[in-house]
Amino acid sequence: MRALPLRFVSRSYRFLRRRLAYLPAIFRRPYSRVYYGSERADWVVYWVGHYITHYVRQIAGVDCQITYTYDGILHQVVHFGSRYAYLARGFQDVHPSNRVVFTWFHGSDADPSPHNQQMIQMLPECVPHVEKIVTASSIAKARLMGWGVPEAKIALIPLGVNLRRFQPATPAQRRSWRERFGSPELAICIGSFQKDGVGWGQGLEPKLVKGPDIFLETVQRLAGCYPVFVLLTGPARGYVKHGLEALGVPYRHEYLQNYEEIVPYYHCLDLYLVTSRDDGGPKAVVECMTTGVPIVSTLVGMAADLIQSGDNGYVVEVEDVDGLVDAAAHLIEHPDQRQRCVENALTTVQRYDWSQIALQYYERVYKPLLA
Image 1: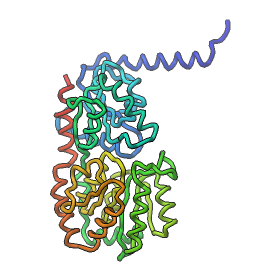
Image 2 (image 1 turned 90 degrees about the vertical axis):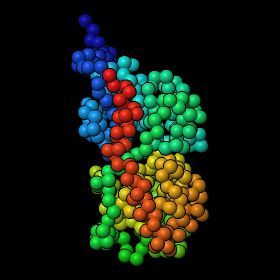
Image 3 (image 1 turned 60 degrees about the horizontal axis):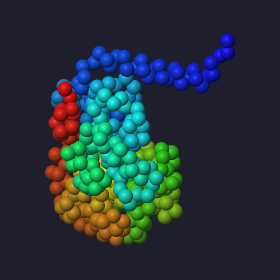
Image 4 (image 1 turned 135 degrees about the vertical axis):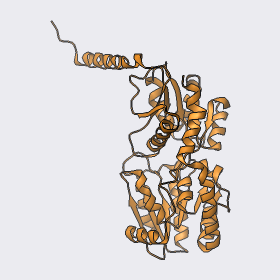
């Protein structure tokens, strides 16, 4: 008797394993649970899911949990935490008995990357199969509607922030952390904490949608007028690091193992720059506001919704390096205006605690889908 080919045995095993995974789900009460599909990386999607699931369980008493796989899930609410998770994988993997939600943080026709264009092209095919598409900004909502997504299927819910962990520094804390991270006392410490390189390695290839080239040009011009020190966190920052070295601008980069350890890095800053061409948040907008850091941003994502230019921060048009430099210089040279922006931002951000944002997820997205 001839042995079965190894490839056939492997495929059969995977087929049976996946089918058997559904057996426990048959005995679960239908539409009583929420599964939030996350990446394993310690980054935005995971932490959004962490806070949503925690507070939905706490506030509503719903069985709400993070998952990394969709095998065995039947007749439940499945929320994919990013467009990539759903369109690239979950569209095929999730069982059709589930009620599906996914998040679309950013993406535009102006971004020529093949991956982005593929996501946009897949939207019409996937829309009939989803209950809601969540997005964090008015800009992204308008784009989704322009691509044919019905407004009734879109939930505009911003990113939140942990107001108990992210708080302003005392003067003593600020001095201590600046000394520890090597920021000279008289330098203008500029922060950039977002992933802006391709992939999860060194990030030597720039992710241009995040504007790392614009960041470098802005820093170069500011460094010609002021003593500048740049503080970086996050993965894939190689392009920016090499650029700063070429410019002769001192910097420090840390890739944190636990994202919530980022608070002291905010406490070092005099200024934070968002130079993206497109963005869903970024989360730095609300994190700067609650840690007392003045922010200058391009007109993207939540920055466009939250920042009133000149009142609680500054926003300028995308790719406007002159505007970024002028706004940053104004904050550097006018301490009274800087303090006014900080105080007003602290007032603005009080509505964005994760407990309040998670309640919006429950009331507007999950509750209507749960039995």
